[in-house]
Image 1 (cartoon, helix red, strand yellow):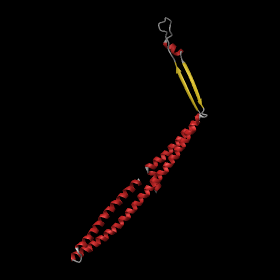
Image 2 (cartoon, one colour; image 1 turned 90 degrees about the vertical axis):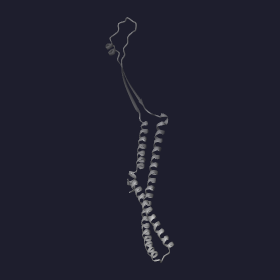
Image 3 (tube, helix red, strand yellow; image 1 turned 180 degrees about the horizontal axis):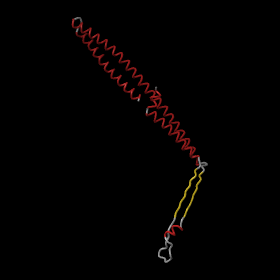
Image 4 (cartoon, one colour; image 1 turned 90 degrees about the horizontal axis):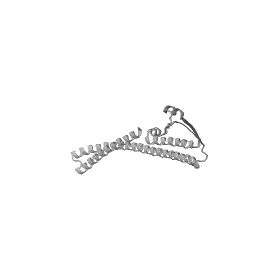
Length: 193
């Protein structure tokens, strides 16, 4: 049950994605150990004309075809030491993954503690409400009996008012407890989504 609630929780999902990102960063950093091959091709041409001279010039289209220049480059880079930068980057990425794992565990323990706390508070508020309902019924019964005695003159006004105040206090406590049950129920629903 708790596992299902965790899998829906955004904080848990964020921690799980952070672990995936950390694992991918390790893979990216390890790629620094691999050799790289770069290739480049270039094609160019030019047109020239002597300024102020009487020399005959070749037509533009002819010069365009005659003055072609093509170049191909290949560069092979084999990392041997790289100042041990690749190794330290991989180690840092591994440490970041370990930190992400620990953060996920911390998030899970915090969420589990919060869920258990909310569940316990909800159960306690329901039990308290049930007990206060019984207390309210008892106080109501006591008030009804005391009212009859007061009307018959068998009870003084002070005692009657004490019993009535107890009944009103029980009514207030019952309403307050019902509110607490509703509040805990809504909190439970929020975490249950």
